[in-house]
Image 1 (cartoon, one colour):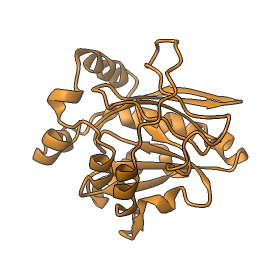
Image 2 (spheres, rainbow, N blue to C red):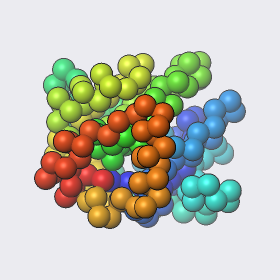
Image 3 (cartoon, helix red, strand yellow):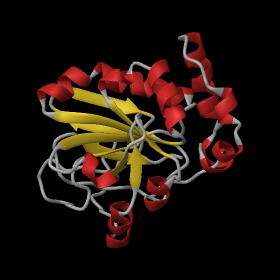
Length: 218
């Protein structure tokens, strides 16, 4: 599951581009610049266009700013209000609590076996000190089981952030992320996987070819 969006660490606003088959993110921060493969959101999703430091959509590596066009509907925010995710201890948490009363970067992984997401999670975690200095929580959500989330935590350097599982894919469906390997996997993604293997990262192929991941993951 993937999307293309740009968001800010410090604003309360969000602009979400229509879901695409490539996922990337672009964060704007005075001392933090990221171009990565995890879609993210900033704090307080329903509050659109409320600050000057707003989030805008932008094509990955295009170098052009996106058009200010909030498309997160009332129906979508209502759908999110009913979504629960689960921490590594199995505790169910309303997803909106993750950004309630705090600033947060919330990243969504394609699935917990995705090698690209593991690389990007490590990169985000490497910037945790900057986020901490800004009072920003780092959160990652993945479609899958709690055990898969635990495995992801063990095999990445994301220990400084919070990881949550979405076993029913409810948040992904509410946000209308595209799904399925045939939709999200591209030749360019294949080349990136080869590059990451050279860096020592590994795809969890067993998880990647599970029926639920193939049909609903990415």
